[in-house]
Image 1 (cartoon, rainbow, N blue to C red):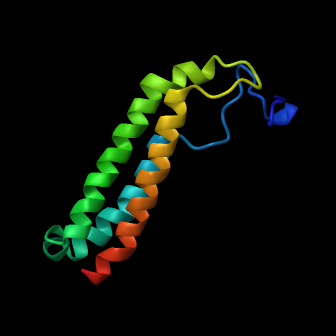
Image 2: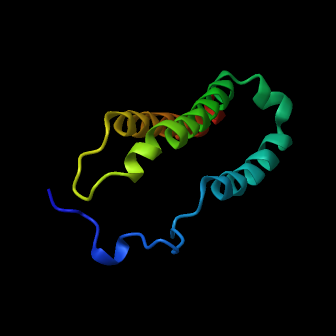
Length: 112
């Protein structure tokens, strides 16, 4: 199977990744979220959908840690065109499910 990335997208040893790291994204999203939460903290803390969202966010962050320490080392050493290891597929599928559920909970908070 051919490599799906163009030659220019392959990583060079000293070149930084164009993607922001997860710490930057987490900080960027947690500040507005904290401000929105503080406006109605007593109401939101009792909302079952918000509680579910908080649990799902924690699960998503745990899934990121699992990927970083368990699946990423196996992915980094793959030859171009190799199939993904099962552990990377599982953590990727879990990530999609968890974060879509977080977004759905976030949209549903107003209705409960």
